[in-house]
Image (cartoon, rainbow, N blue to C red; front, side):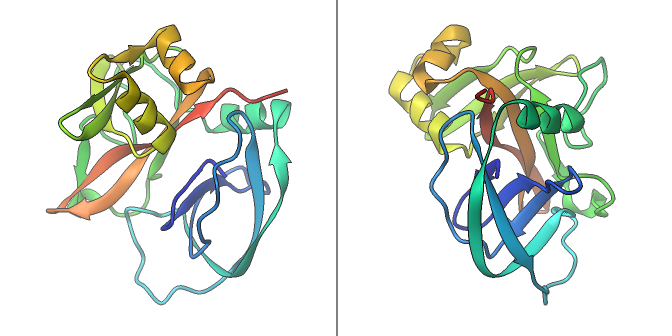
Length: 204
């Protein structure tokens, strides 16, 4: 489990190593930074049409069972397999802009990107009622809305001062490892990209 709220859990399927976005799982308290909970779910059927904004969607049926945590080498291996590679012209979730037109989505491309944090020149700001994470990827500087509540609270504590580098790590209480970016809900015909989580380096 990488990120979760009352509506959805985003995680990695340990059998395939692929992203999953699970609904009907219920809300769960966040684990300690650097540790990642393992949940066992029964896959149910969805009566809704296919959602091209979430091709990784899985509907859980019945109770969710938390069976432990993944740490250390296993987490690093899973992340390394899913990392988006930064190079000139590289895109985040299949496009260069902050959002994608809904009509351009056919569900053939992933709705999530896992980006190593060390080269992104991270900058978090809380202004005008919104928390934004600035990152540099593919040679382009972007600012994306943040849903990660740990990061939101850190930004609010520091506001109006932006958080970068060691000050960001100090305020969070952990060293960022990866940024989990993905597609949010459809709004006015477009699907914005958001930061679901600023993930901590895996504990040993």
